[in-house]
Image 1: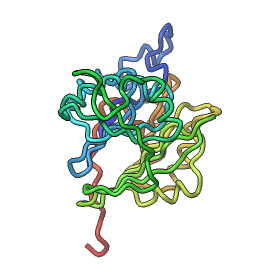
Image 2: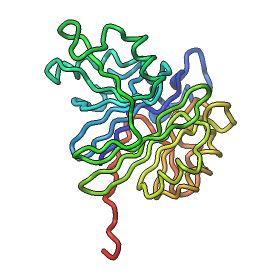
Image 3: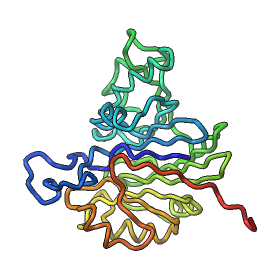
Length: 267
């Protein structure tokens, strides 16, 4: 299983407009963050999770040339606004609609923002076409399993995702944009080789986990490797990553990971 972090920043991005703080002026490329999204390749199945404002540029920068299905975790603008650029992937599918798996809130937001794109085929050649569907708790696919759960994020619920690749048993958890990861969601994530968690900033926030909350959650889940994403300009990659416990790191735009195969007991 391969993971590509297309973006790891917040709704304002980093550097921010009209800000001259040390992170916004940083020369470290890891401190330049576009809005958060991720691309997962599971036994050849290409799953795109969210499409930020910079989605087209993220695809070009990371060589994303195929999407088989799309997951919208929730309808906030920094996760949905780039979906019009999915029109190219509809072209590459022969002009058929792209399945969009989401929540009730995400579906309503999708239909409100892109009424011209809802249907089995594009309205015109070159237009996008989406088929919104509610993501079930367990989606069985030939390439593996995608499990979903609901996470609290202010007034909305966000989809938390757990991928398990059929051929290797590799397991990956993606919990972005959430304030709390409850006992059931932690249990669902256990056994993952890699976990990604919302880790907005050092100070507490009403709708996102701060660094300390994300670290506690990561240690409770106990994955060999955890990455924090959705990072504000309050986080300096080099400085703040050095203070994290072993096995926990900061994600950055363009980071690529191969999730290792599940170890066989006694092997």
